[in-house]
Structures are given as structure tokens and as C-alpha cells.
Length: 210
Image (cartoon, rainbow, N blue to C red; front, side):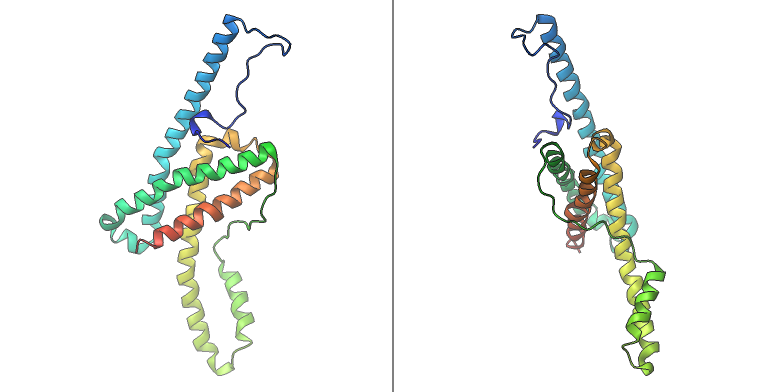
């Protein structure tokens, strides 16, 4: 697994020489060193850009979608930013893990895809199904409580999905070329891991600040 994000995702550079040749010429050696340094500089710049943008981007999602944080921004701003900063490495490690699987193979857990916010149509289908089990005289009260609960839960679902989309957006902005080298199964696995291992954990960490 890649432990240094500055070294990049791609396979390590190898000198462009005949395998049967045992001695590298001075020119080949210098070219190899130059290409290695260029690759390291390239991935260092990517990681620094990602590290700089992610905490601010995630913090803005928190303050844009959660009223309790928005209305008390000065109180929570430092803690939210520090929490978001932790996920620079969390997202990188998740990607690093899948990159290793993509390169070497290995078992993959059966992860669920990211859950989109529940539509009003789907909620209505659920209400109609549940109301059949409730005495008719309670239908009006049940329906009122159902829709109040739906609106409250929807706020949370929209926030979770916005965090997931923002994590994906910022990471792919810098690492899209590396991501596209994944086989489709591993690409899907990374996407789902980003949701389960990073998004949901970040959301839990944010709510724990309240």
C-alpha cells in the first residue's frame, strides 16, 4: 500500500533499459532520476491541493445544510474545520486500500451504494403501506406525524448525500486520472467505501460536536 501520498498512485518508474543490460549509462540514470523527481513533485502538488481544499469544502457543507451550525458558526467553526481536516487522510487511506486491491487483487466486502435522499413519491408509498396497519380513526394523526418525521429526516439525508458528493468532487478534481485506471468493480468499490467509511463517519463526528 502507498504510505506516502507524494509518491503517487501509478506504478513506480523504472529505467528504460534492456532487461539484459546490467549497467545503466550515466545519461539513462540522470533521466530516470529526473522523471522520478518530476513524478514526486507532481503528486506532491496534487496532495497539497487536495489537502488545502477538502477541509474548507466540507466545512461549508456543514454550515450550509445544518441550521444549528449555521446559526452558531463562530462557536463551531474551529471544531468543524479540525474534524474535516482529519478526513484528508481518511479519504486517502480508503483510496490507497482500493488501489492496492486493484493492483494485486483480493476479496471485496459487499458494500451498499450511497443512499440518495428519499423522494416524496417513495415516502408516500411507504405511508400508504404502513397506514393499512393502523385503525382508520388514527389515519389523520398518523399522516401528520409521518410527514413531519419525513421532513426532519430529509434534512439529514440531504446533508449526508451533500457530504458524499463534496468528498467525491474534491478528490476527483485532483486524482481523476488515477481513479480512471481502476477496473469498474474497484471503482465502484471505492465509491461505496467513500460513502460508508468516510462520509458516514464524518457525519457522525459532526453531530457529536453538538
